[in-house]
Amino acid sequence: MRIARFTTGDDPMYGIVQENDGQDMVYGITGDPLYTEIRPNGTIVPLDDVRLLAPVIPRSKVVCVGRNYAAHAAELGNEVPDQALFFLKPNTTVVGPGDPVTIPSYSQELSLEAELAVVIKTMAKDVAADDAADVILGYTCANDLTARDSQRAEDQWFRAKAFDTSCPIGPWIETDLDPASLAISSSVDGEVAQDGTTADMIRSVADLIAEISTVVTLLPGDIVLTGTPAGVRTVDSGSSIDITIEGIGTLTNPVVRR
Image 1 (cartoon, one colour):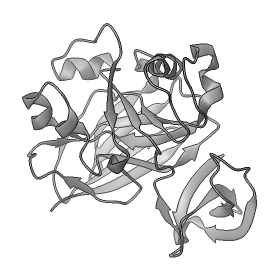
Image 2 (cartoon, rainbow, N blue to C red; image 1 turned 60 degrees about the vertical axis):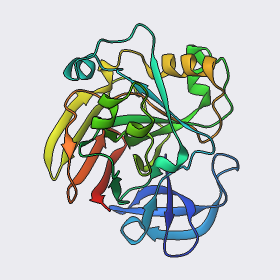
Image 3 (cartoon, rainbow, N blue to C red; image 1 turned 90 degrees about the vertical axis):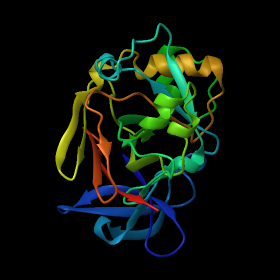
């Protein structure tokens, strides 16, 4: 099931994206699927006629995992850490499909990072890896944009990773997906940058959920970014980034500087 958040010009609502007679349609539902039973509200519109929004706005946090692909760690001259490397993005980093990514004023080296994002559906603390699926609503595409020059300049990554618009997600949440071996790629203006697979993750989704939940309580709507494969590259103002994950779809965002 593909859960989208969208607008037709009125207040945002949630909906289910389904194909009908060869055309993708959006079927509006009542309330927020994180908290209420999914029920149709009578709205039915072609997908092409809506504006897709970020499929979830985290109430609390985005938990990110660094260096979870060995080849990516190597391309930046880093070792794979002995324990998972975690950092946070605030919810002000989250934007949706088509929303502009703004290069921060202090950076001259903005870099893309295609990532599989996990959306949490229920409060989770000290979750065993075998039970991780029970706390997951679904998966979406994400771009962990990074001010690479700031990342090199400081030991902590707040300026590099936490700036506004640095976490586009979308186009929707796919609830029926096995994350173990999915093609994941990024491109800039149609030119392929990354071309990898989630099978190369050092720590699986289940292992990450288990380890993160020993540190913090995950809340409904929280997002976990699972790391990026090799091939990251810088992007300039005026370019367009596509993040594509098998079984989910493509997230597209333009890059601007203000």
